[in-house]
Image (cartoon, rainbow over all chains, first blue to last red; front, top):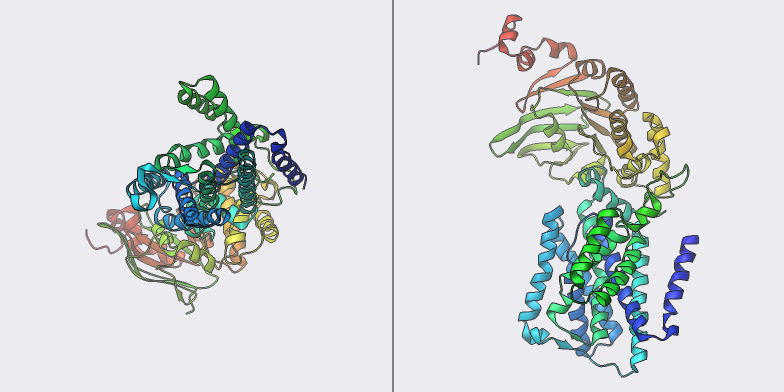
Length: 318
Length: 252
């Protein structure tokens, strides 16, 4: 109960960010919302189920193009966003059936390739996507400030939805089953878990809001091109964030997204020329010294007291 | 004869290796059947075929009047067949209690978390791990982890329990405890197939014993019958020893 109240308070404070009026802060806030969506979503397949997916960029780009094309066809923006969610989820379900029987590195490589394939398709299919020239989106006829607020609140809402989904998964049979699969898939099947079904559901859920985030991003920046929305870093960053905060936990990815965003921003400002190298170094150091994420530091691994742990999430849902 | 589990001419081939060849085996409800044989005889393969890990190359597996070969592992588990692993397979990062809750939540009598917790605690008490319920599974001793496997099997409330060397690696005192546990599980009416190298365990617990050698069933019967069977003596001790014992063994 206390945790829900704290979370709600945190969200309320964040939602009041526009009061400060600074559009730079709002841009950062929007990025935070987007990163949180990506990291939380990856956490469902990568953290809970333990399948290291590199398909985030594929879902993101697919959502961006779905949203952009629909908006250009005259579909209202919110509907285009919703459709992008569904398109990404459907794509993930089909993809999941095809590649989720692969394990470990093999799954990672297969999922990584998917984004590259979509990138090639988006680049080559000039008639539909405009190819390398990219796609423009309809301009929204409201003030720049109003736009900044609109996209900030939209992205924040999507982040809250993803957090709610994560919480729902973690506290359900699905979450428990995914934990079993992560820790020992053979034993999971032996206790009666339909591992294939559970993994496909997890993969689908991990794509749902990423597709929406892609579409929102497209609407926000008014212009997309294949190398931008299918960038491999879009797959890598959420993994770093989730690991940084604490993979397999509910709040870890949110925390990781915030820490990552701040670090990225500071490094950008101070080491413009070598920012990628510095950022990479920081990430390696952080992950080396925090193997279980920031939340792992706070929590350690105490045995839950007698009568506690209403649920199997021992580590996760405390 | 009523059977709860039957293998009918089951073969399992891996490339050129015949891991099981035309094995017939029938298990009666409530029976404790011992499955013995030298290393590599196909005992664990047989368990893997029953539980759907491997699909037999030919033959049928019938459980409770229903053909189960070709079903997925989780489907077979939900029908009421539980197993323990020779090499223990806990969910290492979960507590002991959570480990045992999993089969209660997802097994044949799927139930909610609260009910699963109650069942899991009961199973843990039964195997004597009640005091360790909130320990991490990976922190248990080997004997503890073997008992955890048993508790996981029990929490499914199975009709048939397959025990794959639950006593391997235990010291004599621990084996006595485990023996008593298995005896009490059998008294609950659970049908048990027990794979074992320790003759003491097999001889005291099992109603019947089947012997596998090179993937084929070479003998079946009571402990006394098995002990006299020349093919069994030969499989374990070689045919020269068998001949020296006066048994009639064909050469080669």
